[in-house]
Image (cartoon, rainbow, N blue to C red; front, side, top):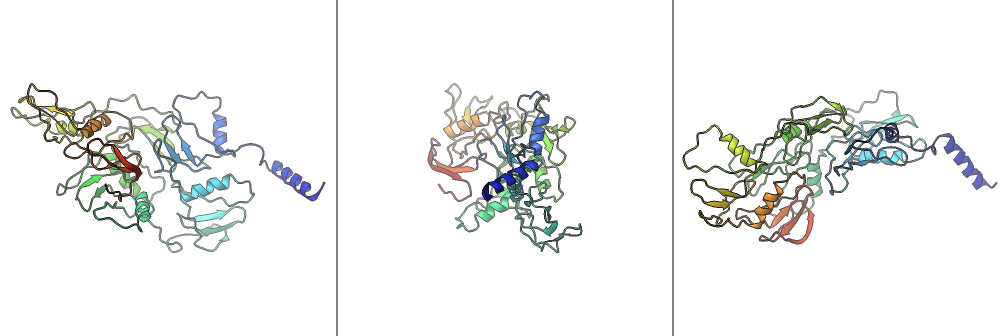
Length: 438
């Protein structure tokens, strides 16, 4: 046997002895193995494992299509990394990304970074093979101190570390466009000290303000307020999420909000691993917490009351005596304004924006006439707001009911120019960064 063959044989024997070739033994494989004989419930989540049996860095729910990042050694979800169906892969923090690569290596003694629940590097990093410890930058993992023997005395307080920069999505967006020339009137998002989006955003040129999801920056439809009308009233879920984002407590509960800014029916705590059913408006717990294994369904609830702007308007004036002949708006089952409104006293009918209820001038029809012909944009908007599908594109219409030249999809983050009459796309869509001019 030559020296090369002897080396290969020796290495194969060593790897076999150490169990490297004994099949996947990570926690993910163990979890699947422990539940292999249990019947799978329809729509339940099943973790995806690597060849080594660890959790894949990006997990996807087969039924909903949503994806998110996890700690590849524990499978615990990294809060704020969710992406909807067809939105591509989420951007995972550097620490868990590096850990995923390290776990799939077969090099003995390879350094495996220690990550916190946000997916960032823990301040004190330790190499198990060398027994050395050092202070690290939470975002990049860069060494901030010289390695020393790990005797448990190393402290990485503010005196030993560089000031942590704001790293929320808002700060990342602003940083990514910092070198691009700013066009006159372009919108620039406002960020908190932690780098998240401020709950209320304002357009410096137009003076309009609106509520957003403070983690993603996605606008909450129907919250626009014109200049001089004060701050918009933001839904309870995104308001609570904004407060949670500014806390520095690890494991603090962060509510999960839908595109309308209300609480998702199933709420869970990443730190405790528990899930429960919640009231969409108040977030009040409706069921006892249980282990978050993807099987909890929150369908056995009281029917949620229509909370669209039309329903809210009627509710706000419910205790006020109605004047003779006064107009009363008509609402859909979802609480939005019906596309065509009728005045019961005069018999006139007209088209409105189904989200705001604002009348479209020039669409009035006298009693006994045909139904008013409503512009294409508000017709499409009425259809989009009538369904329950999350992420459905809602066109942006002007006061005349026409398509605005600039259209944006809140769910995909893409923007494009459109024909005002038909809404037909002009050119290619691009990622919305505030620079597209139509």
